[in-house]
Figure 1 (cartoon, rainbow, N blue to C red):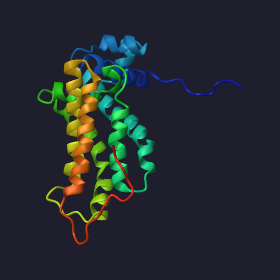
Figure 2 (figure 1 turned 90 degrees about the horizontal axis):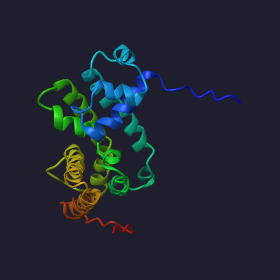
Figure 3 (figure 1 turned 180 degrees about the vertical axis):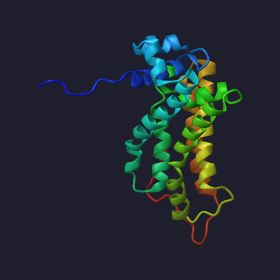
Figure 4 (figure 1 turned 135 degrees about the horizontal axis):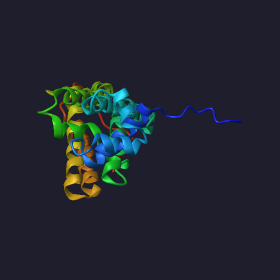
Length: 217
């Protein structure tokens, strides 16, 4: 039977190249010529799909959101029945995928934000939408875990979800600074410990709640 899988078009190839090159070199250091070469397309094809490199940067942030969104939506931590176990499972999953070269596990939108936050508001805003959009996927489990444990807090599910991303982005920076992914994995371990302590010691309404039969190492 003939292969009926459609071949990636020039736009898709350029976006894939952007995700790879920008994470490896940074947004500023990545040139249009390099993107075209990596994608195997002509410069004319580039400007047919994107008016400028900045337009590609915005599209790359949106593409990153779509691809990583699908990746996390199918991750195994969603299989837990308890919302807090899903939250801890998410953190454990984030640690498990810190593997390979820096460019393989660091964040495209975090990388671009650090470079262009003051010089390119359009790319900055696209990156912010990606980061906070991902954080928002954690909020329902955080809220459900708080309710299940009767937790009363002066923090919100949104603020805690954002904090998880702050730790993860900081962990990526430390890995880049040292060239060692181990320091990033250590930071994620500390984030897990923080969440366990936070939910264990937070003020509760009514009877005290325990973690039941769950155990976390």
